Image (cartoon, rainbow over all chains, first blue to last red; front, side, top):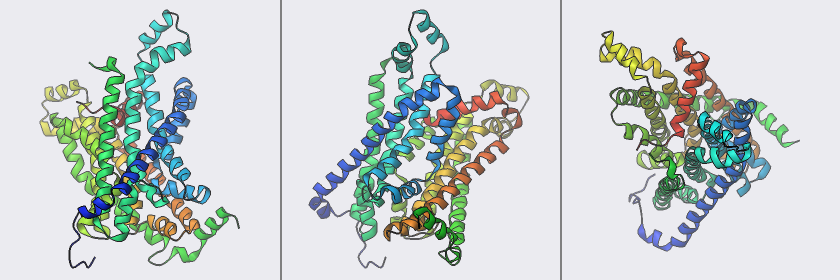
Length: 218
Length: 241
């Protein structure tokens, strides 16, 4: 870094010329995140119900998802690359894998938290197990499950930046570009927008959680 | 040769086991950097979280610091540190310390707050001073949750030290990053295997440390279950508003 003139943190003329590109990266970032969280939920709901209903499967399932979570993100993507290439599939498999621990665990803990007397009351009113699940137990577990969705989403937004190394990455591409070209403007834009996206997702999902579960307010 | 066969021969190649770019050197860099960062962060985070928890002050800060930490991608922290202090080990170290602090502050705070207040009263009744209550009564009881925070932070540090290869530092991540830029997927895969093994080892060692530091009375099955439920709540529950 032998720059005679220090590179300013941001050059607005560059930003002005690249608004459409930056917008496209932002949209890609949101898309990668939404796909990962939705796919994660599609897998985590049946798996979470299985782990909750059949206690014998629980330790195995939680150990497996926990093991996935322990593998550093860069290594997990790297382990997939030889098989699925530098594709969006590689990114999504990795991103979904990381949502699983959070989502499955929150589903199990949320359902476990339903008081036994509430369950007894539902049984006494003649609820069958399936109807009891979706009319009584799932609504009561919803705050914890939605908290999991919120944490998974915020975590995924951060992880998406790393998939820039695989040629996706949304805002991560801007950070990587700034890093490679030793040019601060795209780097700062990438960082600021990804943090802003994570904060907005956190606040937005927190609000959605409050609106969706008015009964959990004290 | 099959792909996995190539990976095995890459790992078995003596050329990859010597010199400044060899596996032992990279492993040593990775381990030394992770330990230094985790210890530094612990020296900052644990006294802070434990003190806040003891006095029951600053709960919003102690809990929200984790939420903020989660919102900032570790890649972004690394790149930002690089811009501030230049390439090399320093930005990697600073970024790792910054990442490791939030989970330890939050868990040590929550661990202290969750102690049965009657225990504290009993300590006062026995004439224990504040300092003694904190160190001899509260800390041992909070230990499982505090150590869960150290464990989370440790695993995260080892993982992010891999990313430090992106900011021109060494560590095992070099194999992955260099392999990706050269499209040498054998090296990418071999590097990833090494990183995954190291993080699994870190997880196991930290779990053993957590168990070792937990007082025997809290290791009974019921206590372990109770603590697991509590520890799980740290990332699960909503920030206390």
